[in-house]
Length: 184
Image (cartoon, rainbow, N blue to C red):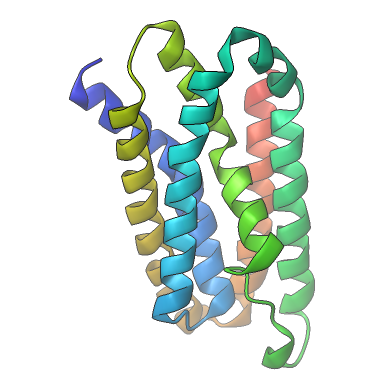
C-alpha cells in the first residue's frame, strides 16, 4: 500500500478524534499542557493499538465486533456528550469533570478508535504489514487531537458555555453518524 493512501486513511480515522478533541478543548475551556498531552497521547495510542488488534484478530472476530461496535461508540459518546450538555447548564465551574482522566478518557479513546479496528483487519486481509500503518495512524490522530484541544479552547473563550453545550451535541452526533454509517 502506498504512502499517500496510508496518510489519507490516517487522516480519515483521525477526524473523529479531532472532533472529540475540539469538544473536549471547549469543555475544559483552559486545558493545561498535561490535559492536552493526555488526550492527544491516549487518542494516538488507541488509534495505534486498534489497527494492530484488528490485524491480529482475523476474520472470525470481526463479525462479532462488527455487530456491536457502532452501538458501543454511540453509547460512550452519548453518555459523555449528555454529561457535557447537562453540565453546561450548571452554575459553578468547580463541578466540571476532567474528561482527560479516568473512564471518560478511556471511553472517548475507545469510541474514537473503533473504526481503526476494522481498518487493521482490512490491512491483514490484503497482506499489508501493520507496524508502519499503525504508527502513522497513531501519530496523525495524536497531532489532530492536540490541534483539536487547542482550537476548542480558543472557540470556548469566544463563545463561553454555549460551546460546552454544542460540544456535547457534537459528541452525540458523532455517535449517531457512526451508527448510520454502519447500518447503511
